[in-house]
Image 1 (cartoon, rainbow, N blue to C red):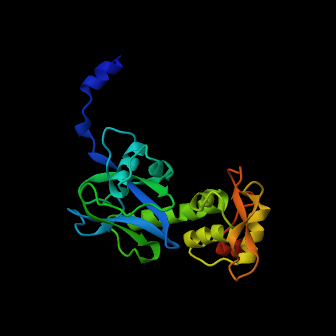
Image 2 (image 1 turned 60 degrees about the horizontal axis):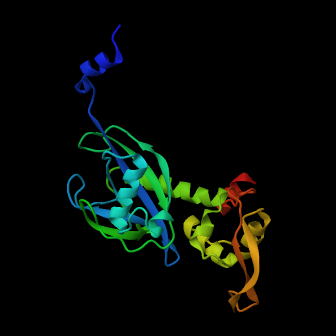
Image 3 (image 1 turned 60 degrees about the vertical axis):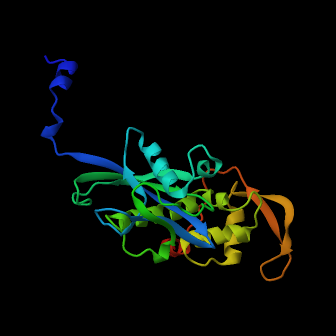
Length: 250
């Protein structure tokens, strides 16, 4: 019987179709009250001059390390810095349809990166430009990046339904109105103030009162809004469903 060492010494990878692995990062942030995605302008072929999600081929590194490296190259942040450490990074899914890259068979492992107030981008690698673009103004993208972005947006919007991730986008102390603005930006729809306030306070461990009030009055000149801080919940139960999803389950 052949030993494993003998098998590996005789193994010929050229007998199989050549393939490569890349990472693509859908990085989302809120700027001026709107949800934005980080896009780069490709400096070379294929799709030269097209906008795309930041990404690149995986080197001698883990997939997570490759995603962080690509994100750092386009934002100017570096792993280990406070700003990059506060980025929520999670693997989204893999994309490997034949023909998605005209060069060769390329499988991409996509990541969702989500963080408040990320800085102005600076193009790195082979990109000729980098931009924060409102998600409703993206337009056509290279490769299958429009599909990846759509999946990332759906994942981010779902994360706000079932987790307290939105509290990372406000200050240490915040009003329910400020929290509602985060949900409205990510979900892309206006939310009824009273209904949202009631739902937030009905979720155990989501937020807790500080006992203080904001320095200024309410949104319409009423009493000063109460201040809250993030609670200890890791999952929201009941979930804060998007209005469209709420209507669909009634």
